[in-house]
Image (cartoon, rainbow over all chains, first blue to last red; front, side):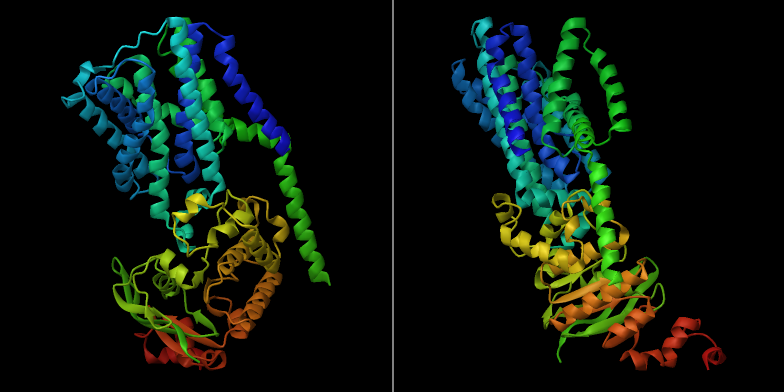
Length: 335
Length: 259
């Protein structure tokens, strides 16, 4: 089982690695680039919200902060347009994390629905700041140093940097899941007060997880800004972004590793494809709404968990073990 | 014998309801102390105050002579006071074994949790030993949410014990479980008591309390009414009055009810 799991991961990685060499059409590689960007964001979002159950709907704050970090620094430092700008991508992550620390400190004082509402409110505060502050360029946005790579080549470096970010996010998510810290996040999801009573420092754990998840999202925002070359506050601080990455994680399987990856791959690629093919920017919203309803109603744990449990016949196995234990206990009584 | 856990003059009101009113409680080291009283007499609130879940309006809680009033639940637990809840609370969507691992290593700094694996071999072994002790070791890999109510009670007991607390506070360990399991839980408590653990038990099942406890404290209307050996408490007219009578303000002739 372990071996075949590793094999699947290797195959998937190989497929992603050779994709831009096989499919060279720039419009296809653009779709692929955005799919990777969202895979990284959904995985990173899931690493906190999926594990801890604190559904954050304001992650656009970190995406936008990363984007503005890239734009402001590259503009003010008069950077030469080109590959050197990629070095600002991690810096976007750092800035997003620094912003996440006070935001998390404030928002994580409350739980459940109140937390969701607070994150949405914080998001709109940031969006409005970007619109109204002078240094952000207001609604006119900011133009980054214009990269003049040939269109047949342009997407390729971006694609591989995005792939590296996805790998980073995935490895981070796996390490968190395997650490005691990750276990504590799961305990918080299931019963926060009980976890506190078993010595888990829930406040510190939640704030750390929240700040960590902002890092990758900030990197993605920076990468996005560099890719499109011109940013506007309403696009980098986009409420649809907040909802999309949550939806991707829900669709694939909240709190699982492959769920957000698969969810983001399907939804983002699907959205880009629909938008390009039917040149209709909102058709996907209708389809996604319907899809989301179906998933929540029939497979609330997400597609990945639904099919995995079908394949492994998990429920049957659990029932068998439970029955066996009951029988063994009865036997002990009888003696 | 020395006092391990002491609550002194604890008062706590919720809105207009005085849940605790200058309540005192002492738990001797290496004892099994019972805490009984009619519904609403403040037993669970006292538990919550002693374990840091509720801050008292007045009074102090001390453990081994150290003042722990207003300590948060994680700090209280780290000091060596474990508790279970009246309605069992387990982590439903992680495995039984992972439930056990939450409580281990409670002293280490939270930063250490980032870099270390969720369990070492010795931690897993210890966890399995305790699961074996309560008899649910073969369920270790199941999600805890699949367990029956009785099995959840056993799991909750096991994951409190895995951290090796000095005193264990049990809130109705026999509530809602079948007779065989009640006897089994009593047997486990006796075994652990022999090994030096101290217990404080809230329970409505009188047979359970009277057969198990060295000393019993009766609470009534947020106050400790009587403390003593089970036999003394059983025949104390004040106790009978608290359970059967209407309370302190009742007319004296209501005493004839329980002659």
